[in-house]
Image 1 (cartoon, rainbow, N blue to C red):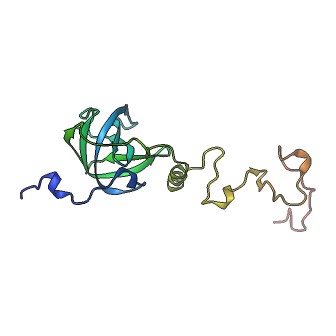
Image 2 (image 1 turned 180 degrees about the vertical axis):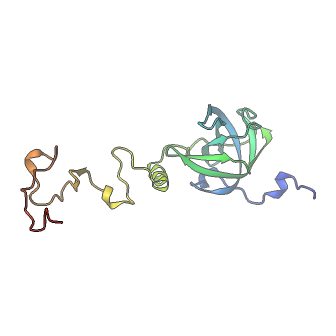
Length: 190
């Protein structure tokens, strides 16, 4: 079986401004604008981030493969095959996963723009990611998917819907007032 060169296999490319969370099979071409952080994960993997752009915007690219880390420099033109997108800390990230392929196809001669930056923090992406992972919303943020979180809870009741008889003198702080002891005819009997 012979392999077809990468540039002949791909018939459709995405543009950076078309990227949204949870995409798979992303084929895209871009230029490296700047090198980002190089860091280790808890599992010991090394990840290199790069800021990349095309004529429609920019995004953060995350590389996990040891072969690709530090392989690219600013000005390199890269073709990514079978990449994917995800959200990390509220920011859209493009990744070249285990099944992805990054190939340097040139340098310097590619028009690009850095705006819009698709990797800027997006509160909606962050909320969707927390909901997907089952995490609570950040402080001060309202989750639109759970009606129980649409108001500040104090004393176990939504702020404006406290039941009658709630001790308003306590201001919502401290335990609720004690109920008078109600004797029950079956209490204490086997």
